[in-house]
Each structure stands twice: as structure tokens, then as C-alpha cells.
Length: 234
Image (cartoon, rainbow, N blue to C red; front, side, top):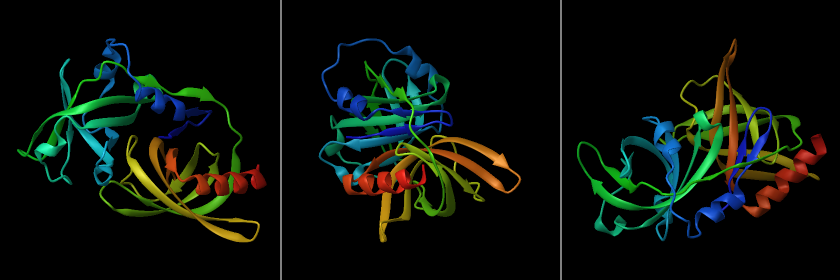
């Protein structure tokens, strides 16, 4: 799995980190995870063998040293989920880093709303910092949040790791998992770029809001097309 993270001054790349998270880890305590989680925080979850369930979820609560509870209103809960391996990615603002860990579904409940208990992980990987060239561009984009609500926005600069967006919409918050769709023109060929991302930063302006987004996943062909487009504008 691949994941890329953007900040205003540099980009955090943790594609290899996610691969590391899938490998057996030496158990170690990670109090910083429990201390840094906030109710309502977004997590991007991937369920092994159940790709239809992959997507953005929100933190419902924490059972210290036991589990992380995430709301799952879109899921039809069944015992099939129990013990299912899960990969989780999130941005922890207090640590100023993208993080990833591997765990399993420990329990599930339907009341008061559907939610899952993810077993508390014993190890976590963090993003690696490196710099990337940024391109000043003006590209219209459609943003879709975890509730399938669509927002129109404009990308004003980007690298292969992430981008800065301006929008008048007020529904997007730091930590939200989103999908993005936009078109770029490379050598006279229009290419539709579709990717998943996470809102990394948010600031209010006189005309609306400026968002920093980290790119999480995109297809190889989209990555090649986007990289070619950005190189033309750097």
C-alpha cells in the first residue's frame, strides 16, 4: 500500500512505512497514540479481504490499553469482521506526523450506533520527512468527503505528495479523509486524476478556506500523469 503526506513546508512520505506496518513488529508501548487521539478524528481503514469496507472512519472513543472505538454507520455488522486484519492511517496533529499501524477487529456493537473496537496496536510507524518540488497551478477539483458530499474547489499548488486547495465550503476539517477528482493536460492528452487524500491543515481567508491535503493513494498511471504535469509547471 502507498501513502503520501503533505505539509505546508515539506512533505512526509510514508509509502514504505505502511509496508513496514504490515510486517511482524516487536511489541512496544505507544502511549503517544492514546494521548494524541481526539474524539471525532478521522482514520483511513483498510480491511483485509473486504475492500468494499475500506474508507474513512471516525474515532468514537478509546479504552485505555485495550481498544480504539470507531464509528461505522455505513457498515452492516457481522461476525465476519471479528479478528479481521485492519490497516489504519491517520494524521496526528500533536505529533505533526502521518502515522500507520496494523491491528484487528476485536468486537462490534450496533447500539447506540454501529461501531467497532479495534484492538489497541502495540507498534506504530511514522512518516519520513523529505522535500519535494512544488508547482504553482490552477486546477479545478471535485472533493468528496466520507459522507459522499461533493465540494468544488481549486488546487493552487501541488507536488506529487500533496496540494494546497482553496474552497468556499466549510464542511472539511483537519483529519478528514477525502477523495479528489481533477483533470490535467499532458502533451495534449487530458487525463482524469482520481486519488484519496487527507486534510492536513485548514485556515480561513477573506474568500473562504485554504486546505492542505496529503495524497494517500492513486493508481500508477495517474501518478505518472500527475508527475509529468507538475514537472511542466515547476
